[in-house]
Length: 123
Image 1 (cartoon, rainbow, N blue to C red):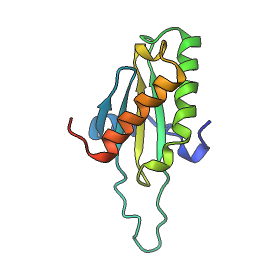
Image 2: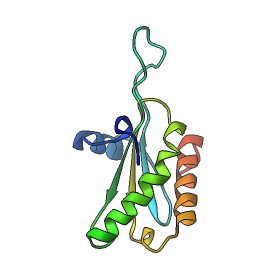
Image 3: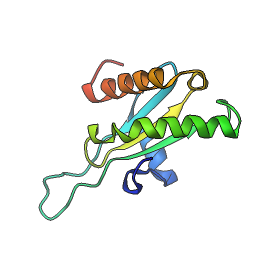
């Protein structure tokens, strides 16, 4: 589970990450990233933590299936939240293929999307 300070909860934060951020898609998920806009070296200010949120629509499945996919993604993201710049907003949107993907496939897709976003790969 993600620590409380790393959870994205407000609707405005989700909208900012999705509408103004960059995205990278894989077969089972899409990752949206809005990099931190604050200067971490500004005097007297500490860098805000990276926050991550998850979107799993009804197209993925029923409530039990959606919650299972969300738990799996949250677990994977817990180890990767430190890769992002401080203050970043990250939204992971599950696609219907995420239901049939095993843990390793979801991890590969998430790692590839994160690497593409952080490495500045071509769209």
